Length: 197
Image (cartoon, rainbow, N blue to C red; front, side):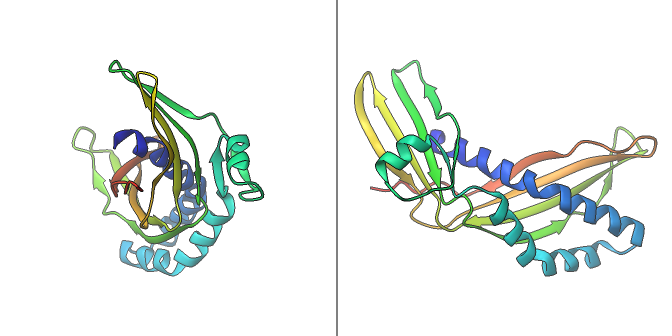
């Protein structure tokens, strides 16, 4: 279901972006140290437990309509980060709101890999650099409220019975005149959310 994927993709992008500054600082050190990409990937593999711990530390347990979350589950999720619900309306009368997500900090980074750099076809003085990050949410829960033409369809957790894995690519161009450009994030692969019944 498309509306269930949007908030998860947003949380994933924010999570990966929050740790990239440290990763990219380490990458620039690799360049100065003149090590190979394979050696850099070995270093990243060794760094996975530390990266996971740092990511779990910076992410909130939950995010969304914290008042509604606390009303539904009193005494649970005390570290909720307030955010507006994601609302989607369709011309067919469908109204969907993603009210909150929990388990955001229950994520494990399973792989980080520096991709082979390549020269840009259009500009031979610019080289593309990429870092692929694969991770898995182990306790992600997403609460959705939906109705069609005013009739309630769902007001419950809709995801995720199973671990929810994803792969993101952080890339940038390195220009011989200006240096490193901005980081671009892209979802490469994401599990389809399992609907709970």
